[in-house]
Image 1 (cartoon, rainbow, N blue to C red):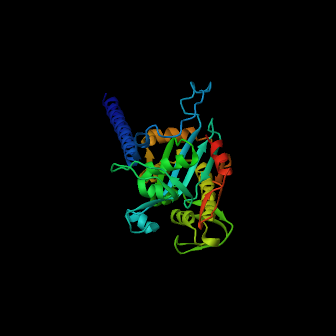
Image 2: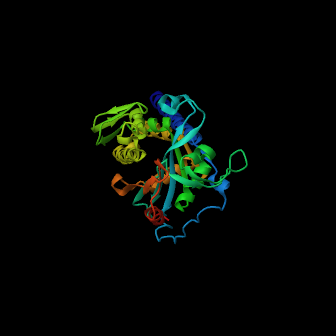
Image 3: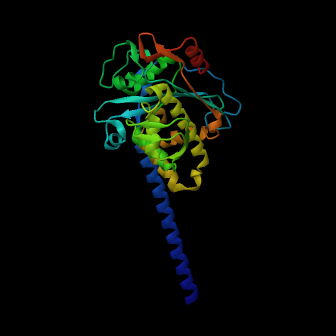
Length: 339
């Protein structure tokens, strides 16, 4: 009897310990989900712009849509890299001391129907455009301005004006908006274990604090950010040359993500998710971890080889050789292909 009672007590204690560990695991998972979702900042783009926007394309649902809960339709996302000027981490990474912010990098990511391919179109920040009147967060609106640099839209009216200007320039409805700042980008690269990039030229840029000989390099987060920001260390200090580096970096990041099996390393998965969400601003359609995961799952089949990177066709502005304007009809034809 005593032996059976002892074994029973041991089993009961083991069961209680297992139940306790399970409850702690559930609590930890719940806290992680709450924390990561709470990291994300969002802006109500749809509410601010209303119906004064390009129409969404009308597409018939495919036969697989009913069986597959993940979205499969075409998608256009405006992705901005923010030259944020607030926060100690961003200042240390080159953001400066002022309280303003600029969209240092702008890309329209078009995902094909079926989500088996994508096109990333870079818009040079120095492109001169007609900036439309935009609603301001504090109330009121900005004035329409012709011959304004594309990146002034974000500086003047934040994400809402950036989206409205992008839609005005392209004629393409932006389904979503994603912005990541300096610190977030550097943390993401570090959380992925770095990224390998090949450069065709030597880079020596005091402003981005990056010095690299031509060749293949495995970069940490700070170095990768320096590469994304490098301009003056390139021939002519061209923004178009910087865009070429940024596009190489996009492809390299996709390759690194594909090579990293995050599902087998929960700790690294959490670090990556925390890095992404901690410095992310989205539209309200992507402002929870669940929505971001759903988007990521729908794009899981994309590899670097499935992504095409291009730059909006431009020519030097006739009245200012330091600025560019859209080269027509090539730019219009490019945007029409993404509608």
